[in-house]
Length: 220
Image 1 (cartoon, rainbow, N blue to C red):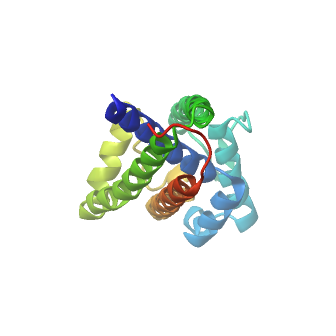
Image 2 (cartoon, rainbow, N blue to C red):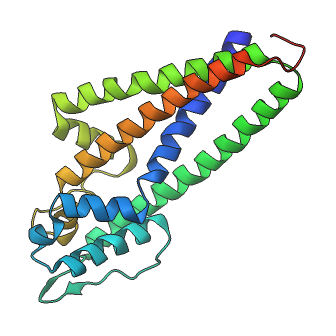
């Protein structure tokens, strides 16, 4: 029973860490920095201010911070096509669901931690934190190995989990792809991996801190 509890809480903590890491990657500064780094303005043949403004508008659209609408024409070229907007609607739905799941996990884990502290279940907390930390750290090199082996196949399989076939593939001439090319997502994946590994390290450190405490009377 204790093992099942530890496994369940550890999985919840690891998933929570993954969700929080994704949330950190949707902040405006990340979009701006990476869009500059992958030269989105030159790829889209737009002025830097215009291209970065559009990238931010897309970020706001999929996170719900900016309801849109996204422009169908930008300067003298086609902007966001109906197909692109439809895909971004799907992305927004996925991110909204992920956000709700993250907050629910945060609440559930928080309740478990408070209850465990109040009942002196120090070792249970230590085991869960340690298992979650190593799980999070272990997932990253595994995902990296799969992605580096065949990034295109990995990218396609990842999208297939959330989007219907044919709804997320666009021409290299589409504005959406030029603003957010493959290097953008590779950079995002690398940043996500770093955040998850760092978070896993923090969980391991937290397990040591908790073990060193002397509160409570139980040790289950």
